[in-house]
Image 1: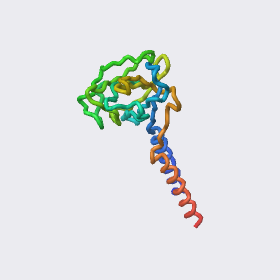
Image 2: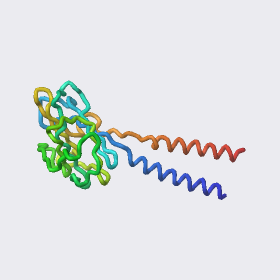
Image 3: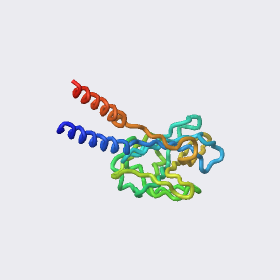
Image 4: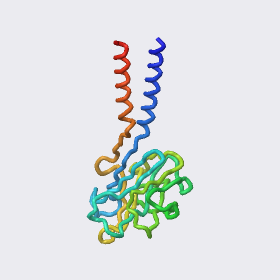
Length: 202
């Protein structure tokens, strides 16, 4: 009886752990919808923004036909449940902290207001990946009027063009990335139960 109780408690703890891990999945947002430049088609320029708990990673990914030696990310705008400023940043990987300035407000046209905006130093040609770590989890919410939660400004593209692009329009806007424990924990639970049942039969 005691053994069965311990097994029950163990399963409850395991399920709680699995729930916690599943909620901590990284989410990749592919920004590919041009909001201000009719010379670009949907998907011509793609920036991935990965939100993973306290971390936000920005990277200009594809296609490279429009990239030049001057191509750079100039601004990241997010609509978050809690507004962040430079004071909320605890670390940056792939960029110099002193070169990231909050308050660099870029007009994103009809996208609406973003309560968290950062401008990258225009003298540095940064295409990413840049990972910004905040002092609390990043939770995205849609803004008005279209409900976008992310936008990025890219400059120095082919023929000197720039583009402002947003999430949620071209293709699949959100792709969950299962973390290793999300897959490993259920497998371990099944193996453990099979082992216990086998021992009871013996």
